[in-house]
Length: 247
Image (cartoon, rainbow, N blue to C red):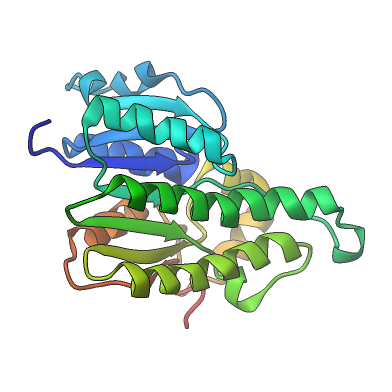
């Protein structure tokens, strides 16, 4: 292994996870793209002047399954010898009114978001017997302020905020642990959820953003790069939401 950095990005099959993985690759960082569904890495060579295949590997994994996560880290270390950055994007939604929420709805969301972040972070730390590293966890503003029909999701995201602070205290100074809260970023999932292709849906979202526009994936990748380039920041929460939520 040369001096190249290596990042492992979960939930990299679509949306912001995919955008971050692509951005890191464009900066000549090796990337392990992990997702519950199989990812065809050939698409990462599309519209690119660089052949990134030697800098990338794909792994299909359920982040809430310890055995599968261990296998992922073993495979990544076999190929790249090291992992410098872990970015925990993996997540799911199972929204419903609280009184109708099933045990499966609760367990599945908590398992992927909170338990998955725990397992991946723990295996990352175990893999780093030496050297510095970064963990970036992903939370949401609703983990602070709540929302209707998302008791499972909001609880998981609130847990990730506390989990980040605990890890920052325990893993300092060698491993920095920070949390990213993106919101109103223009991705296919957000467009569908908030009906952004309709004027009513678009206006209802954008009118609540002081900066007057939807976020772009570049806004998120810029913040990720900022966090990874820092050397004296841990236990912090970074908002990428145009002022939609302020703490």
